[in-house]
Amino acid sequence: MKTIGRAFHDLRREIGWVLLYGVLTAIVLYSFIGSISGFRQNLTTARFLSGFKQNRVDMLILESKGSYRISKTDGQEAPTKAKPLDALFREALSKDGTLGGVAELSSAPSGFARTVLIVGRMADCMPVRVPNDRDLYLAVSSSHADRVGTSVKIGREELPIEATVPNGTMVGTLYNHTRSGDLDDALFVFAKDYSTAYKTFYCAPNDFLFRLIAVDADDAFKMELMKSVSSAAGMHARLWSAQAYLKQTGDSGMQYLLLRIVFFGIASFALIAAMVMNLLRVLDAHTNDYAVHRLFGATKAQTFLRMLLLAIGFHIIPVAYIACRILLPLGWTGSEDGGALKRGIVAFSPEKASMMGNVFVVLLLLIAAVCVIGYVRFQRTYAKGMRRE
Amino acid sequence: MIAAEALQKSYRTGSDTVCAVRDATVSADRGEMIAIVGPSGSGKSTLLNMIGLVVPPDSGRITIDGTEPIGRNDRQCAAFRNAHFGYITQDFALLNDETVYANIRLPLLYNKTVPRREHKRRIHTAAKALAIEDKLKRRVSVLSGGERQRVAIARAMVCDQPVILADEPTGSLDAENRDRVVSILLDLAHSKGRTVLIVTHDSSVAERCDRVIRMKDGVITP
Image (cartoon, rainbow over all chains, first blue to last red; front, top):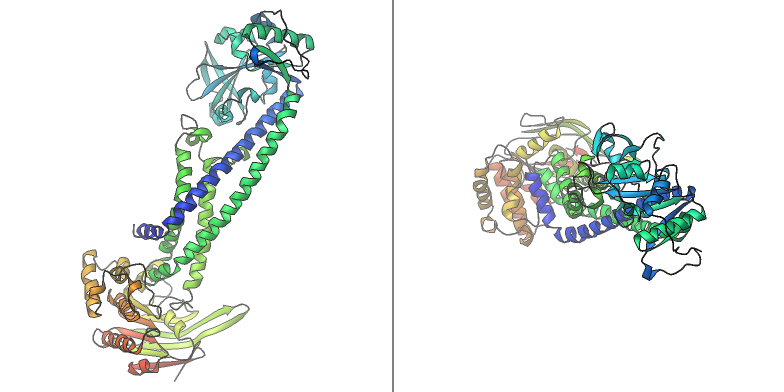
């Protein structure tokens, strides 16, 4: 208590620095972590889309008829006669067909943030090998790996969970309007075909319209698909090849992110350097106090603890900010059920490098390391004796 | 009271090793005030620092009041320093943004034998003895040099430390304050039975001490 009181007293003398420096650190940390997270997201998108590219995937795009303009580059026109969508899906939306689709089920079993239904050829573009003989196959994101081997009631069936999907996996651009991190808490249901999905989950064709792909399809089928979708949805449908999409969006997005990472990397480096130098300056400024206390009875451990508490107190704003992000289920650090804590605070894998737990540990280690340096410097001064010229 | 035998201390400066104190043997009785004099770099302060357990000797023995503190762990050494030594330095070694009261109280915070309820009485007694009782609530940074040194002396005696180690205590004081500080230290030795070791360059200070130890090139000379 005595040492904590002394450290608090030391801190009061530096309150201006604590506020200014703490807010700056928190801002840079937040931005840097956001950049790393965005970079990771883009990498997984690129990885996913390369699967689309390899499979010669065309993505269905729906546009309101009012905003539709015939694109000369597409060379596609909205057809006028249509086959019923339900019939088309029963024929083609299957593992042996041409279509793949994703739908999100309205409810999720306990412990999962959402249930994602993946039908037909979409499974070919996912990092999971679904056995050919299975009508339904369940997988979970890596963060729920402990659930593999258990079973869940889904739709009308009790089914075993048999595989994991790497964290960070997205269902491509189809989820662009949501945070990809949400899928780290998802249950993935792979259905062999539309009929199975319809029977088990009462899916309607419209559920797949905004997340539909055609794999290795010929022009005639593409025309038929667009005709059917346009007719059923009352919107203009067109197909956009993954290759064209990647060309248009992939490079510029990645370059922008790389630039951000370089910028925040430099900012973080400068911040860390400033943090080290500033901490050493503060500790040096208190050398006289520490020495006087040592002369009159403070132990080495008390002196070091006092330095450490001062250093942690100096970073109380970023430390508290990170601690809150770990403990409170906000954004991509956790899910509504407190996933970050449940999965453990620290995750030593590249894809989790930006996790708050890791940043927290790195920050504390850095503070401790600077305190050790500060303490060695203090000891050198103290060893000169009572008179210190 | 103090028995230091064959103390030796060397420092490394780059590739050279400088012997600061060589084979120094010192003894001091209770109630004795001893001056350690000598030219700059002769090892006076190093000898005082070794006796005060601030700097560990390379070899030799130190006995304080029949106890050998060297070789004890840090916690025991810290407690020993607290209970036995009061330190006074040329630059006062005070906590400048603290009050006189807080400065005098410092050794009491680490002392486990003096009950907390007795702190106030002891601080007031020490302050009264040094004529700074009216300044207890003031910050030491606003005091004069002589007053600051009296605060340092009060701090060095508040736990009834039997040994007072003073490194150039009058170095930054005017003649009047110098004489006053020396008189206080002499009184502490002769009336209160404290052992006072004082490092000084000032011959007028040394002359008033009971005994003088002379040092040259790290060696005690006759």
